[in-house]
Length: 218
Image 1 (cartoon, one colour):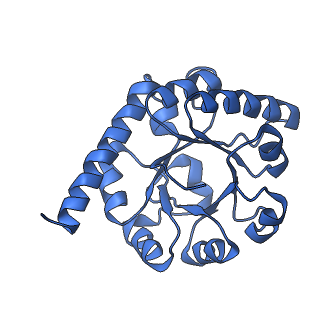
Image 2 (cartoon, helix red, strand yellow):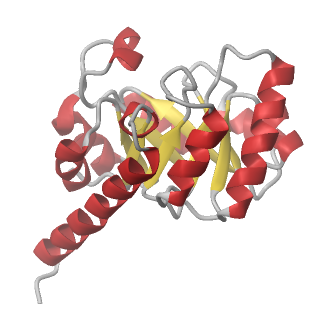
Image 3 (cartoon, helix red, strand yellow):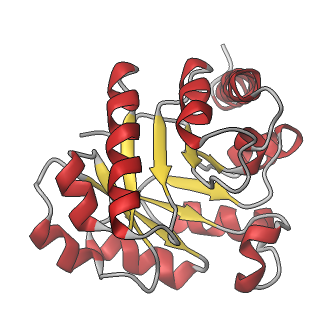
């Protein structure tokens, strides 16, 4: 299974202005094709129920579904993969449990964590926070574009920039070599989730074309 998406939507039901399944459906209608269920405070039964509902919705759109940390939930609902934190089960251990066709993403916050994730067999990583964002304050000051660029140059798996990203900063992140971007509030907290998702994806398409033309001029 390939990492064939550019926008990785991470859920946070506290930021959505509507029930999360409704917001996710709107994001999918806007073109999102990868969802990570990250609702760490939910009791297992509620998380399982929500994940199953989102699995049904994502299948309607041919979108990938990832479950944060909970390998048991991911397997139970037939998710496309799991997303592990830097303090979660090591990638090597997760690979022994997961079906071979499931993808593994890993959250990283420095170059060594990125290297370890790749060495362990991760399929992709998120890296951040790139810019200032309340959801990542516990990880310290923003890492910035220069550090992101160093990570992209050092490892060979896709890197998704994360943390405080907005339409106005997409060019910097993709220009640093990131394979895509991971977002939460820029989409889920929007008044019009569908339009917000579409605008981000349209911007990514335009930026990718500009970067390609600069790299390989005709």
